[in-house]
Amino acid sequence: MKVLKFGGTSVGSPERIKNLAQLVQSDEPRIIVLSAMAGTTNSLVEITDLLYNKEMDQADEKISELEAKYRTRINELFATTEGKEKGNELITSHFNYIRNFVYRSFTALQEKAILAQGELISTAFFHYYLTEIGVESVFLPALNYMRIDKDGEPDSYYIKENLERELAEHPQQKLFITQGFICRNVYGEIDNLKRGGSDYSASLIGAALKSEEVQIWTDIDGFHNNDPRYVENTGTLHQLSFDEAAELAYFGAKIMHPSSIVPCKQWNIPVRLKNTLSPSDEGTLITDESTGKGIKAVAAKDGLTAVKIKSGRMLLAYGFLRRVFEIFEIYKTPIDMITTSEVAISLTIDDDSHLAEIESELAKFGNVEIDKDHSIICIVGDFISETAGSAKKVLEALENIPLRMISYGGSKHNISVLVDQKDKIAALQALSNHLF
Ligand code: ADP
Ligand code: ASP
Ligand code: MG
Image 1 (cartoon, protein in one colour):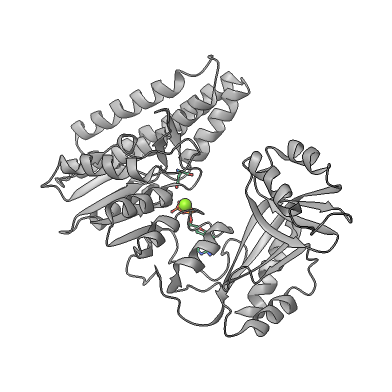
Image 2 (cartoon, helix red, strand yellow):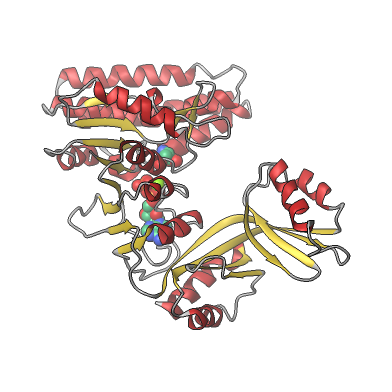
């Protein structure tokens, strides 16, 4: 069984959906994981924000706008009266559901239920379209098998058991259509795997079934050596190791959800990145093999907060770091980067929802400084044979950018620096000019 995930652009218009219907047909068994049509999840986020803020008339207007978009798509996508009728019924039922929340009190739970509508609609559309053109497929509801546990982590055992049970109900079938992104939580409520989470869905499905391969189809020809949104003339990397890809994804390469490599790495399942707009391109193959030495790629992650604790008296005495880290553990706040000196420790966090509490606890140890709006720039490659040279090249490239923190030696394939977010693009461009 192969797992193929198609992102928002790949299902972004009736024309794209029609192309996709040709692309997914094969004699081999396949699970097709779809995102919402491009722009839909963003619109649903806007709608839920308006509902939260009790701006009900505007919410209602936005809902109608999105609904109208879908009505035009139905006419372009389906050729038969029956197809159009089914499409219209689908849209009526999903948009009635969303509209139900207008002029009512609104909770986080309902927000998740609204965000799920994009993937529920795109998969149903695709399944109806395949039926209309005479291609047999099975609609596989992700809410029947995809689940996170009480800590928000995927419940691998539950996913495997339930997915296998669902598939066993259709032993003769080869083509399955399912939703990315959406899942249930430990209470059985509708939840999701965070923004961009369809990649994660695909790799969790791949890992659950020990698939031969997971393919991520998107709007670019594979993993690039720098962020193409900010840097010109980036180049495609045709091969990466799981560790290299995981570092890049975690530190901001938007082409993959930050956690999506982990399940495939665990079961050694190759991940292939492909371009829906140009399917014959080679793309990128991610496996457990690392090829080539030296620096391969750069990525950046925004929105980081730097926390500095200064304490001449007890810093680096044994037990001190444990007490500092314990505070972050209590508030379930992961730390991304750490540097130490004799008198201070600096670290970065991505999630600052408990920053105030963390700051007041840390203040018991010494002077605490908080700097918001920073970016981690992560430089990835195989540095083992080129240790001195790689670090020198990175620092030379960044000679005109103020560096707040530098992390080197944490693993053999990562050098990270922390810069002010306003310097990020300049840093990415300087690295591109100097390294590639
Ligand atoms: P999808 O909707 O298919 O999931 P995304 O927008 O999430 O697509 O991811 C693809 C986008 O990721 C590309 O269009 C590109 O702009 C961006 N991107 C950021 N960094 C990289 C990178 N290193 N290599 C390739 N694409 C990248
Ligand atoms: N539709 C969701 C989002 O926009 C999930 C995804 O596209 O991967 O975040
Ligand atoms: Mg994505």
